[in-house]
Amino acid sequence: MTASELTMQFLADILGVPVDRPKVMETTALGAAYLAGRTVGLCPDLESFATQWRLDRRFEPRMDKVTREQKWAGWRDAVRRTLTAR
Image (cartoon, rainbow, N blue to C red; front, side):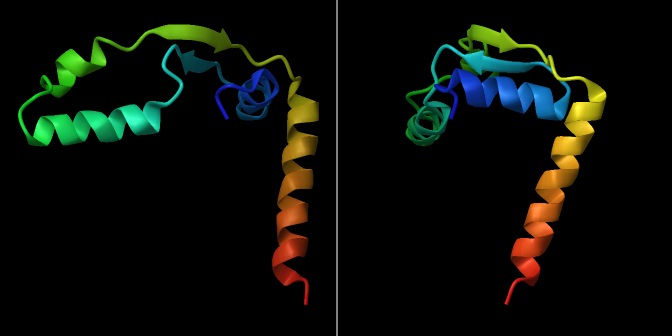
């Protein structure tokens, strides 16, 4: 998901907040590897690990409030109709 410029921008737009993309986009794999390394004493404490995080790009919201609310309402309606479909 983080590799998609479109998805990251849409996320910032629909949330109405900046979204930061890290340089290391495989954060799930990195986190799992870190925890495994921590378990056997190979990785540093969490604070040291966190200092290695680097920003690749920040996506700023560009969608106006009215459009954001319309899209959010449309999504909620689609979910409602999906859950009530027989």
